[in-house]
Image (cartoon, rainbow, N blue to C red; front, side, top):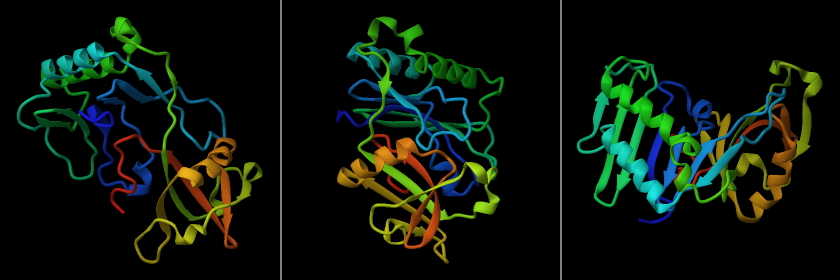
Length: 243
């Protein structure tokens, strides 16, 4: 299978939340065919928080990948797709997606705290797959390292500094690329929110600035000040789903 195919992806979806509220979320587990296990790492207990999330990658052996997929099958992630629990219109779900050469299986769970034994088996799967140093100690091929993304998505919208929790901590940085108003795709009319993806030379330009920025950093482009959410993309992420 191609190396960028996620053979196991476990993530929470946002229900009725707008896209810009959920596009910053990461899967709790994203295991790729080449053995990369990508997860969100520990977050610094500081305020304001960093602009870029702490995402880490651990390399598993081929045997380790096979073991995780065996655990997934034993937890019921095989055969026909299924929904565990009653769907709720305004509530998110946890999805478990397994991809193998024979096809893709998806299980959706509306309540991960349910007493259902099938849900309990999936809770155990999350535990073992997200703690490789405990359960896969003999199949770890590398130390945990920061994940380096080749693409970065951002959501930008005109800032309202008065609405920020502490204006004394706000900084404003000049945006060095093409005007934000011309990038990506607008969400709705009027085009208040924009979603765009940067890569290559543009990402090389922006990455040092994002690394120095925090969640209260604002960006000035064409005399407009924007608030911006930056999200390094995983290998199989869509650039701007829902936009």
